[in-house]
Length: 410
Ligand code: UDP
Image (cartoon, rainbow, N blue to C red; front, side, top):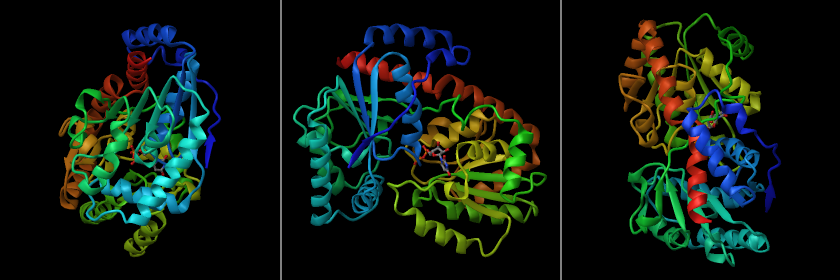
C-alpha cells in the first residue's frame, strides 16, 4: 500500500554560490534549531509530475540539514488512482460528483493508509494533495500536520470540496500556492501561501550546453537546425496539448520548417494519460514534425533538460495550472515562455517581459511567430526570466518556507 522512497541527503553547501546569501544564512540558522526533528512527507507517486519533482529535492535537502526527514508514497493502485484523478479534476472545476461507491473506496483506502502510519511517529506530518488528505480523519494523532495543496482550487466543484473539507479542517496548517486557491469555509488563519520551486542543481536543471542538447534531441529524430517549440507536461486535459498542436499548425503557415515536441511523463497515479496520448497521435494527422515523446521512449530528466535547452520557446498552454514548474524550468534555461493565462503561470510569467500570457491557439501561434522572428527579443526575455526564477522560484526559498513553518509548529 505505502512504501518509503530511498534517497541520499543533499548537502546545502552545494547551493551556496547560487542562492542569495541571506537565504543561505537563514536556512543554516533555522536548521540548527530544528536538527533531529522527524518530518514525514506523503504523496502518491515518486515520479511523473510536479509534486514528485519537488519532493525529490526538498526531502533530501531537509535530511542534508540534519532533520530526520522521510518520504513515503503509495504503491500502484489503479482503481484508487482513477478515483483520485477524478477528485483532482473536480477540484480544478470539473462538473459532476463522486459516486457513493467511489467515496467508499476513497475513504477505505485512506483508512488503510492511516492504519499504516498509526504506529509511526513524526514531529511534523506533511501530506500532499487530495489523494490522502482524509487520513487526518482516521489517524490516531496526525499532529502537528500540514496539508499541501498543489492544485488550482480557485473554482472547485463544491460537492467534492465539501466532501473533503472536514478532512482538510483537521490539519494544523494548509499550504496553497495562491491566495485565490483558498476554497470556501476554510479556517483562513491556518492557511499559508507558498509558491513551489525548482532545483537548479537537479539533472533536469543543471547547466547543459546547447550543442549537447541538440545532439540529444537529434537522437529522437528532431532536426536541431530547424526551429523548435516544446511543451513538457503530463498528458492531461488541463494542459491543453490539442491547443498547442492547433497553435503549431497556425504558426507553421508563417514558419514552414517549425517543429513541435510534446513531451510527457506517464505517472502511475495519472491513469488518463494513455487515452490522451492515443488521441494526440491521431490529432497529429501524420505530421512528422510533431514529436510526441515520453519516459517510455527514454525521455527522462536529462532529455527533458535537453528539449528545454534546444527549444526556441517553451509553451505551457494550460487552462488550469496549480503552479506549473515547467514555466520556471524554461525560464531558468533563459527561454521565453508562452503560458496559458491560468493560476500559477500568471504568477511566474511577466507578460511581455519574460514571455507571453495567452488564452487561445491563435494568440499562442502569434507569439510563437513573434519570438522566432525576433531572436534578440527572445534572448532578452529569457535572460530576464532566469533572474525572476533566481529570486523567487528556487528550491532554497521553498526549503526556507518549509523550515519556518515547521518551526512554527514544533
Ligand atoms: N516532466 C518530466 N517529464 C515529462 C513531462 C513533465 O519530467 O515528460 C516534469 C516537468 O519537467 C516538471 C514536472 O514534471 O518538473 C511537471 O510539473 P508541473 O508543475 O509543470 O505540472 P504537474 O505535473 O504538477 O501538473
